[in-house]
Image 1 (cartoon, rainbow, N blue to C red):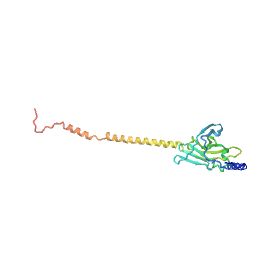
Image 2: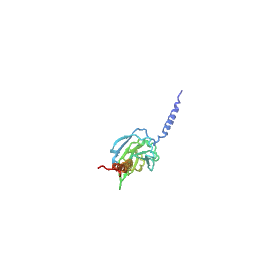
Image 3: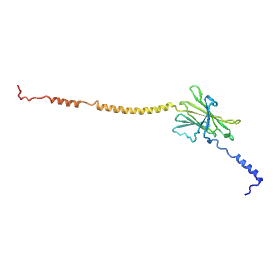
Image 4: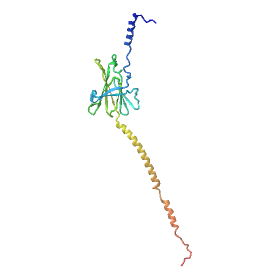
Length: 240
């Protein structure tokens, strides 16, 4: 089959290139296919001095009402899932950081996570984290109970493109002491029930065996003793 004339090849190539240029970019909010999330943890804002680590992404996680409470940032990009065991799973996407510029996902270089918590008179910083561009979640496993946390996440993009503003979420973790008290009260309540049953059985045994009346045994002995005396008739003769 003969090919197209040579005069038609330049317009066809131009149309193909135009179609490839107008092809929509992948959804920036979709989870990347990378199997690992690189991150670096540093104390008191010194994330650059931390050690590089890797963790698998928590794909398909859903916060159930029985064992999890979700807190969303005002912009909607960052979600803090507070679990019953005291850990916090952070999840985020790119769609809620406003209308992204063209090829925003290609310009993305990572994320900066800053953490702080409220003290009695001031706010204290906690560990800051630098996360790779493929990360869409992070597990905070050492959250303290009865403390109000504030976590802020900001994308890092390649210059000269300006970075979107950070989005923050605030939450409070259930005190660990309360969870321990509930478990302890359950265990102590079971032990108290067992002790009460044992005490009731012991009282019943003492009442039945040690505190019973003794009149029946004493009357039988007295009748036997009275039968031991011999009575002679009045008119019977006596021996000299």
